[in-house]
Amino acid sequence: MNHDEFADNHFIRTIIEDDLKSGKYPSIITRFPPEPNGYLHVGHAKSICLNFGLAYLYGGVCHLRFDDTNPEKESDEYVRSIKEDVQWLGFQWDGEARFASDYFEALYAYAEELIQKGLAYVDELTPEEMREYRGTLTEAGKNSPYRERGIEENLDLFRRMRAGEFPDGSKTLRLKIDMAAGNVNLRDPVIYRIRRVHHHRTGDAWCIYPMYDYTHALSDAIEHITHSLCTLEFEAHRPLYDWVIEHVSSPSEPHQFEFSRLELLYSITSKRKLNQLVQQGHVKGWDDPRMPTISGMRRRGYTPAGLRLFAKRAGISKSENIIDMDVLEGAVREDLEKTAPRMMAVLNPLKVEIVNFDAAKVQGKSVPFHPERPECGERELTLSDTIYIEADDFALEPPKGWKRLIVGGEVRLRYGYVMKCEEAVQDESGRILSLKCSIDYDTFGKNPEGRKVKGVIHWLPENTAVHATVRLYERLFTEERPDAVRGADGEYRDFVEFLNPHSETEIDAWVEPVANTLAAEARYQFERLGYFVTDRHDHTPEKPIFNRTVGLRDTWQK
Ligand code: ATP
Ligand code: MG
Figure 1 (tube, rainbow, N blue to C red):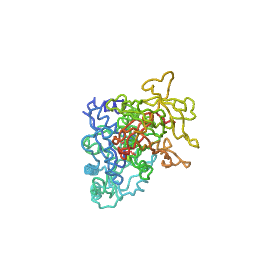
Figure 2 (cartoon, rainbow, N blue to C red):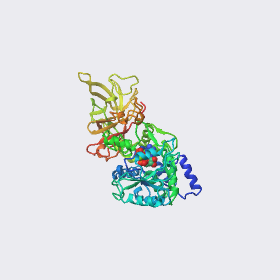
Figure 3 (tube, rainbow, N blue to C red):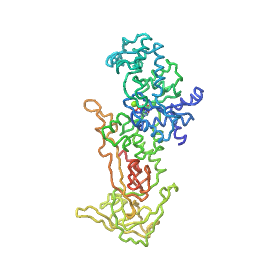
Figure 4 (cartoon, protein in one colour):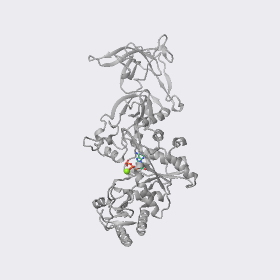
């Protein structure tokens, strides 16, 4: 990781630099505040790179804080996966991971403070009544009949709410702000509700839980966050954020800044919708390599540096941030190009018999696994009497401009000899069963005499090739914006209607023997085919399993 990765200019950087220059803060503290209600996705990767990246760039710190105020949906599994994803991306939070639930006692005390100041009251409107009283965007709301209770009565009721004297949903604690406010978020928002639900950390200690906006602002204040960065949908919540900080004896005065949410075409960036894919069995789990989750992209073979490069290219601004998949794949490819060792693999094999094979004459060659990285080592490639080539590299009736193999034509075997096809062996139906070819022994490491051979194809000697399972992935959805398609009735259609039925194919393939030595998550370029990674869970050296990460070129638009 280096500073350049995060040094692109954007409005948040400008704000931070001004704040540091003016001495408003001696150094910055940012936070990444996921709710542990699912696995992180590519949008979170952008937010992680922003928050941790800024802290890194300015020598500040970044907290990891779980906003765990909705116990029904939260779990330790999600906490564990989120920590793993942040670290895998290359970041480390300051100190221990923090939890909003660590502050429940403090948040409760601030609520009592607000009651004491006459700024919060216990309400008994039912949810339906509350909606009715709330008003609309164009109409002011009405005051609840419980709004003018005395401070003592409010305190007593709130304490009894905490003590469990009232049924779930029967009472709430609301801020006394302004039922006529143009911003509906300021119309006496609820800050506590009664819910008897087991919490993943506090267990059954609480039967009242604080609401998100209230909790978020005060958690930032308790942690002395300087710049609280979130996505634009929270812009209208900022006045409430500021109100809360202003009206309690807040330990600090954090400020919220909003940037636009990343959206990736042909994909989905919502934990709730991703959860639906998992729960309904459309994918094989949160980390299915087709998922836009960080763990899915990891299993697909994407690299931390590739994802950081993508986040940088997506950029930070307030304007729409809808990004093509080829930007993501391009960033990953760029990183893999520099780092991944190479081998030859044949995904759709055609057997070739070398009719003039002579073991005494054949020369082997030691070939580096990466042209610019000698530390990747070398291996010996030697021709055998039978080899595999890609079926696509041969054509009985070649299209115009064909540079690969035809009957009577020649190609060079990568790192080896020039080979001529003498005959295609076919069955009665005309299906090609195998080829008979000859090699020119005078072409090892040099051009053939008196003629040009343009095509170079990859191949594997049959005697050393090893079996591998290869999983090929295509886009998960057939629509650019699967969750924004409306039906004839004007309603949104269920995005699962647009799942691509061909998003995963599993094939048997041949690869080089090095596959039998690989650990999980080994990334290789299969020459001419793309980048592949050994599967994180299912691969073993004895039974290699590769996932296709991305092709060598951008084929997304085709
Ligand atoms: P989801 O709807 O997927 O649950 P969220 O915003 O509710 O997303 P949180 O767990 O609350 O998810 O998000 C943690 C942080 O990540 C927040 O600061 C949020 O603004 C940011 N974030 C979430 N989605 C995106 C996105 N698509 N692009 C950029 N930042 C995002
Ligand atoms: Mg959410």
